Structure formats: C-alpha cells, structure tokens
Length: 334
Image (cartoon, rainbow, N blue to C red):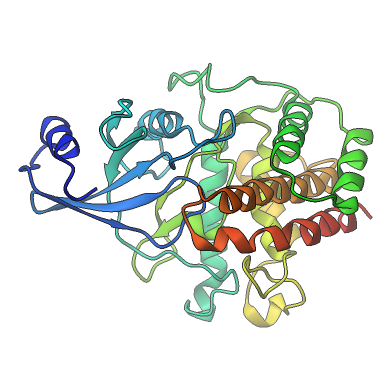
C-alpha cells in the first residue's frame, strides 16, 4: 500500500499535516482487523482496516469501531482519538479508519513477569476500574442508543455465535455441542442490565503508560455492542482459568498469592463495589458462555486462516484451541 496514490490523496484530504508521502508498517499482532503504523508528515497514526476476502456477515465492522471510539472520546474511558473514516473500498480495497497512535506498554502475560511484584495488583485494579467505568457510561447520552439491542443479551449472543460457529465449522466437536446444549438449557432470565461492552476485553487489548499500571488506551473495539456487563467481566477473568502455555496465556495452576495477583473473587468484588452492584448471580453460566464464545471466535479465525483471509499466520494454529476451550467451558459449570 506504500505506493497507493489514492491513499496518499485521501490522507492529504482527511488527516492534518499529511504531505503526500506516507509509510505503512503492519503490526505483527491482531487476528481480525489488520492494523498498521502510519507515518506521514512527521507524525504517527494507526490505520485499521477490514481484512480482504469473503467475510462472515456483520464481522470486521471498522465503521462501528470508529463510531464507538468517537463517542467515548469525551467520557472517562481511555480510548485513542478517532481521526477519519474511509468507507470507499476503492482507496485500499476495503473500509478503514485512522486514529491516534498511543505509545506505551502492551502486556501479554497475565502473570505480569515484567512488572514489579508490588505493582501487579494495581494493574489488575486498573483493568477492573476501566471496565467498570465503561459499563457506567450512559450510552444514550453519547449517542449510542442504537449501537445494539438492550435486553436478552445472552440469548441473542448464543444464537449469533452458534450460527457463526456453524458457518466456520471444519470438524465435529462433541464438547462444543455439549456446551452449546448446556447453555441453551440453563439460560438465566433477563435481568435488564445493559451497558456498552467491549466484547474482547483482555490484558493485551489495553495500552498502559510506560512502566505504569495507569491505562493509556483501551484498544480493539471490533466486538463492542450494547449488552450485559457480566459478559465483559467474565471474559476478562477467564485469564485466571486459562492454561499458562500455548497461544493463549492464562494463570491456570499458578500460585496467585506468590505472584501477588488478586484472586477471581476479589476482582469480582472490586468491580461490584465500583459499580455499587450486588454479587453476580449465574456466574457459572457467564463463565461457560465466555468459553463458548471465545471458542466460536477462534473457530472463525481458523477458518479464515484456511481460506487465506486471516491477518496473522497464527490463525492456522487457532483451530487446536477450540475443543480445549469448549471442555473448559463445560468444566466451569460444575
């Protein structure tokens, strides 16, 4: 894309300070919407685009990401600054947007080996605090009342991801079938809770200030919608239950006290205190649902890898994770 005159012209028109010359460097990480470091006019930005090729319906909606971070810019939720959206596929071959580049630390291992032991609780508390702050945003006041459908979130999401899983399924997985059946049988009644939810809230989707537990920006909003806040909380806290080796890093089997990392119950309590909520009911369902949803997402990543449309070669290894995640979801219901 570095010799694309159409992109150069678009940048000159829409991004202040761009001078007709630009450089793009693809970030190595990211399974879904490819992201690039964009340099032009002596400045740095991030360009985030839809991947090429045939895509699942409703997936990779970068225009939704752009709208959301634009709406959150004037709240207490730390987000990059949305600068410009291009819906014209002819410029680079797919829709994209440009946002501010936020330098800092992205941490990948929830054991936080690179953080001072004494600071590790502060990282977890910051992550819980930012999530609670997001869920407390009045989505109507920021113009996002139509960003999703409030109510019956888990029922709708189970139907959606079941269909997405079936659309990308490559082999029969009995554990996944059993988990889906359990979730269908044990759907809790709708309690009316509704918030903006991130949909993929985890350690490596957050940028911290350099050497600090203070969050600079929450990233990768592709799966954000209006939904049940406990889906976000359970999804984030899966890290304490996931295995510690392989493509997805977790803290399963590790001594959290020795690591000076808070236990799951403490983090749930901290979240509920910040939002002035009672302890969540149906926690086993929320956790089982999140294992199912992650398994369905990774099945889609794997299928895109097989089709040649994934943004990262790791996609082809993701298929191996689907069955173990389904088994962990079944284990969480006991």
